[in-house]
Structures are given as C-alpha cells and as structure tokens.
Image (cartoon, rainbow, N blue to C red; front, side, top):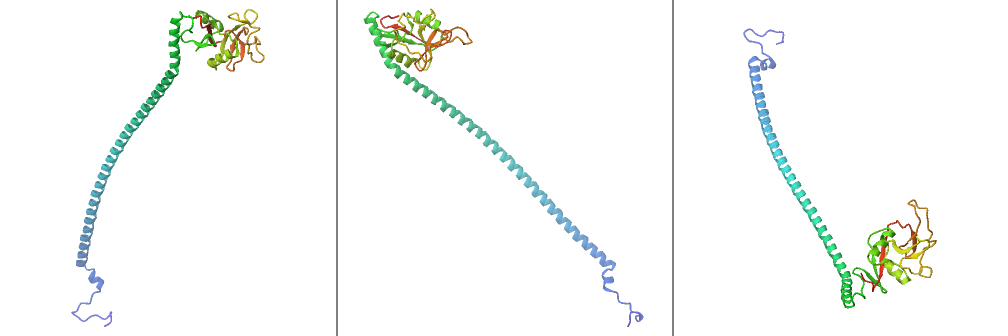
Length: 269
C-alpha cells in the first residue's frame, strides 16, 4: 500500500529505525552507559595523574638527593684539592728553601776552601812574626806584594777621609811605582774606582809618601789630568783615582771612592 493509504484498522503503523533507536528508554540507557564510560575514563585519567604525580615526586626526590650528594662530593673534592694545592705549595717552598740553603752551604764551603791557603799563610805569617820580632810579616787581613802590604777597602770615602784612615793604620794611600804594582792593585780593586795617594792640593802633583812624581811611573787616561772645574758640586779635580781599565783620572776630592792603604812589610802595625 502507498504511504498515503491508511493501514488496516487495528494494526499500528511501523515506526522508523531512528525513532525506535532514539526512544526515551534507549536514550536513557545510552546516556547512562556514556556516563559510566566517562566516569571510567575520568577514573583512569585520575589514577594515571596520581601515578604521574607520585613518579614526579619520586623523581624530584631522587634529583634532590643526587644534587645534595654531588654538591657534597664537589665540596669534598674542592677541600681536598685546596689541601693538595697547599701541600704542593708548602713542599715547593720547602724545596726552594733547602735548595737555597744548599747553595749557601756550597758557597760557604768554596769560600772556606779559597780562604784556607790564606789562613795557612796568615798562620805561617804569625809564626814568622813571633820568630822575627815582627819584622817579616804583613798585618792580618793585608795582602803582600813585592815587599809591601796592601789593604783594600769595601766601602767609599772622600780622598781626605781615606788618607786619614790609612794614617791611623800607620800606612798611607797606595803609591804606584811600576806597571806590575798597578796590575796587582787593579786585580784586587777592579771594577771599582779607587783613590791613589796622589794629589795636587799644593799646586803640583805629589805622592803622599814623597815619591818623585816627575820621574816615576804614570798611567794617565787620554787628556788627563784636566783639572776640570765645571762640575756643579764646585771645586777642582785635585785627587787621583784609578779606573776599572787601569788608567788614572783626576777627580773631585769630595767624591766617594774605595781606597787602598799601603805599608812596607817590615813596618808592621
């Protein structure tokens, strides 16, 4: 029969599938099932969230423990590192000190070895001095050369102060009479400029012991003596020094130079 033809009396018309499916009881069951499913999903998500939070908390705790342990180890390493560094520094300083002490002992030993012949000579000199009533020996700490005794200073004085010092030692500033004597003086005085016992304060050059200057040994540097008066400190160059090259130079008497005292070997102090 056509859709517009009414069904026979007493038989209800058939309902469409959607209407049957969307009936109120079925929708209620479907909603209930969906709610149950949603609840299950929510429970699963909540459970997973709780598990994740627990794992995250455990991870944080593990990380914190690791950080504390690592920090402790780093601090311990730094502490031990500082101690090791301090120890190495101490050992290096101690080794350097021992090395310096060893060098000092070695230098002292060499000095004693070099001094031994001098001490032996001084001892022999003392024996000779007593045996000869003091006529054949240089004073202690003086050096002998060709019948004369020489004392070399280790500091500086003006020419006048040096001259007075030698006089107090019953000696005089050194007088050079030969090339050999000059070589001896230069050997022990170089590289320092050293006063000689030669001065022109009286208007002409004179040796302090009266040695003839005009006919004696001389070793002036080129253009010397020039009696240069142009220095700011004033005065004229009336005193003589021997330079490191062995040549003589007239200089201001107020200059500070080392000096050499001389006396005859049989003229002991």
